[in-house]
Length: 437
Ligand code: GLV
Ligand code: MN
Ligand code: MN
Picture 1 (cartoon, helix red, strand yellow):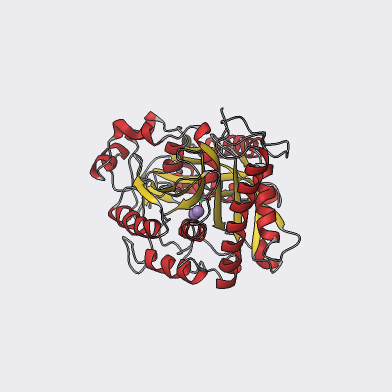
Picture 2 (cartoon, helix red, strand yellow):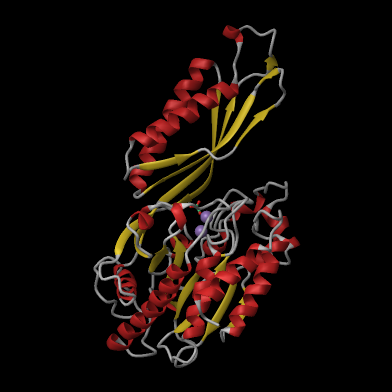
C-alpha cells in the first residue's frame, strides 16, 4: 500500500479528525492532534518504521540504515491545520513520506530514514508558528510558555493537559550531526505550476515571515453624541492602516513583499459605541529578510503617522519571526534528478511564499522541498485539491530523490561516515553528511 490512491484516501481519513466537522480543524495539543498522531503512527508502523511521539508532540517514525545509529535523512511535513482548512496542506507531505518509506523498506540505505509529522506548523492556536519543528531544531523559547491560545489556556497548561512535560521539551531537539538533511513534500499553495501545466516543482528558498498583533488605541464614546472632531475612532484608524498595508505590498511587485491582515477584533464592540480599540494581526513575507524588514519598518512609521492624525495610538507585539531559508543546492540537485526521472526534463524552480517546517529545520541541517501542483493554486481553504496523477509523479520523484541522496552518499563516503560540515551554498556534493554547526 504505497501508492498515490492510498495517500489520497489517508488524507481523506485524516480530514475526518476535526474539532469542527464538517470543516477541518486540528490545532496543536488538541484531542484531534492526539488522534491524528495515533492514526498516522499505525500507518508508519505498517511501513516498517519504529514510532514514538517526541517531547513536543511531534510524531516520529524511524528505520535504521545499513547499520544502527547512522545519521538520519528526515522526511515529512505537518498534521496541524488552519481553521476551515483543506485536506492536503501538511498531511499530503507526511503521507507521501510514509509511502516513500514503505517503498524503500527493502533497501539498505546508507543512512537511517525518519518520517516526521510535525505539529503546530500553522500557529493557529497560540499565534506563534512552527512550534514542533522549532523544538526539533532546538530553538524553543521560554517566553512562549505564557502565551495564551484562543481558548485562554497558556501553552504551558495546554502542554500538560496533552500529557507532555514542559520541563522535557528540550529533549525533542536533534543534533546537526544526527541529520543528513530534511526533505519536505508539500502542495504548492500558489498558481505557478498549474499555469505551466506541471505536476512538480523544485523549491529554491522559503520566504521569511514575521507576524504581529497590532492594537490601535482610541477612545470609546457615544455613536450619536460625539462630534467628529472629538472622535478618536480606533477602527477607522485600523481601516486606514489595513488599506495602506495592502497598497504598499501590492506596489512592491511580484518579487516584493506580501502582507495580510487576517484577524480583527473591535472593543467594546457595540453598534452604538465608537470603537475604543482595534486589534488586528499582520503577516508579512518576502524572499529576503532585508526586503521584509524594510517593508515592516515603512508600514510601522506610516501607521504611527496615520494614528497621530486621528488622535489614536499604535501598540505592537511580534508573535512570530522566521528568517528566509535557502534550500541546500546539493539536495535541490537530488530533487531535480528525482523530478527528471518522472519524465520532466527541465524541472521548474520556484520560491515558496508559504512558510514550512523546513524553515525551522534549516537552522540545524540542510533542507529542500518538492512542490506538488494544487488545483487552481487554492490553499488554506476547504476547496484545496490535488490530482492523483500529480501525487503518483510526486511519490516517484520523492523516492528517486532519496535514492539519489543515497547514491551520492555511497560515492563520497560509504555508510557510517563521520559527521562533518556540509557546504550548503557551494553546490558541491557535501564531503559528508550531518552538519556540525
Ligand atoms: C503556513 O501555511 C503559512 O505559510 O502561513
Ligand atoms: Mn498552511
Ligand atoms: Mn503547510
